[in-house]
Image (cartoon, rainbow, N blue to C red):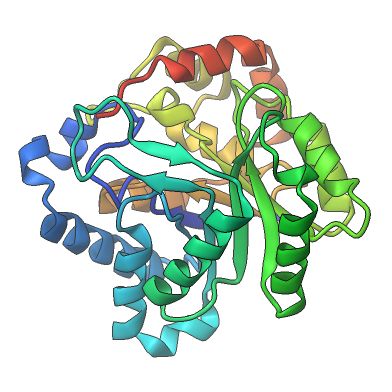
Length: 314
């Protein structure tokens, strides 16, 4: 079964994000006020709906993404039954719509924080999300060992919300296996960073998929490192290598790689323009020979995540 495309709102719900070429795509930072970002988010949601995209991903830390999505849903209530909505708790957005700040989001995986953020998500979206994930569980997170928190998540799962985790960092596979292996685990969904450069979580995702989990692939374009310029030229050496290996445009190859993974149910696009979305919708899963040609492009996870950490908020 081929994975479906989902629209991620990380780059649409706040004016700054860790991605290349934001000024090119969105214009000057001074032009990214709340009203303009709301209008862009609603326009992108309309375009995604028209293109057949039926999965939308948000998070409490994505600025006003949940609010923008909830407003759009209230304008189109007839669409909600056909959509699957995912959101995440565990980070608080603190940048106050600024770019040049030291901290953009604060991580907190405590029971108190989910009790605070769950009602906020309900209020913003107007109803429960279908998937509700702990945002960026890493080995230092206390979440998987917090019995009271896990019991609260089991309550949400019993109420019909699909509870899960998102993962980041070089040890995603270990975290995912630990979450899956919990006694009476409340989790049955995962959103993980996986792409041509950083495929290391693949085997753990395969195990989760075989166990019936929903698997969502994020950052398939490696925060813009696997994309092209408006002129169609690869934006980075990694993108050039990917295009050369597959014979197609780098973003089509990057998304096609994710769509071809048999354990991926949904591959997210972070498109912020309708042109980007149209190109992503047209992407096809890579053929086996193309997949083989990309295998040499993977880098060590520690190297990948160090390079990602060095990217600026734009």
